[in-house]
Image (tube, rainbow, N blue to C red; front, side, top):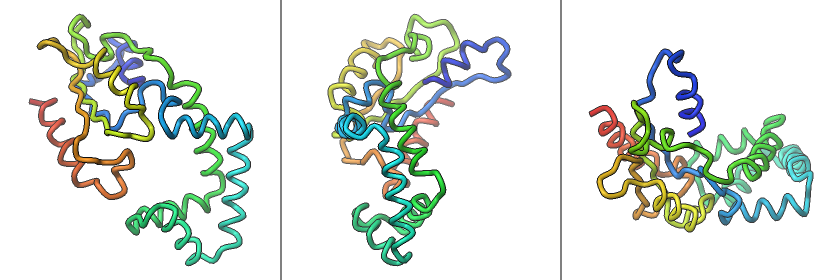
Length: 201
């Protein structure tokens, strides 16, 4: 959404158009109200230097545990992920600053992803100046990073109404998780292919 805003503000200097976008399990507002956002916000209030503490713990864990035992612990915590996700997570935990940077970013998101700050033309509303991007929002049901009330508010306020232009908003009825890339990439790839097909049609 922010890329769309900046792109629209850069026109006519911009050398290309953005004609559409697929927002998958989007956390576009009020992320701190989500179940995981509430937990993280609570932890940050209790432990202000959470990123440093957790990164030190991760460094200690990866230093003390043999690779095979580390994989077993990560496999258990992640509920038996595919090998590619397990390899990536173990490598990430061993990285020099990855854990700390990820938690700094998450803390920043709690502060900045709050209210809806985009204009109607960024959302692709009917009253927007042309050209507007065709947007698809694919929300999860019981998404731990998007509160159900937040999702319902976005759909009610910003979704298509009565044939007017606006983003297409879908709530997943298949139980796909926010972290779909771990085990459901093929399913989401097919869904996104359909969205792209509609955008370029």
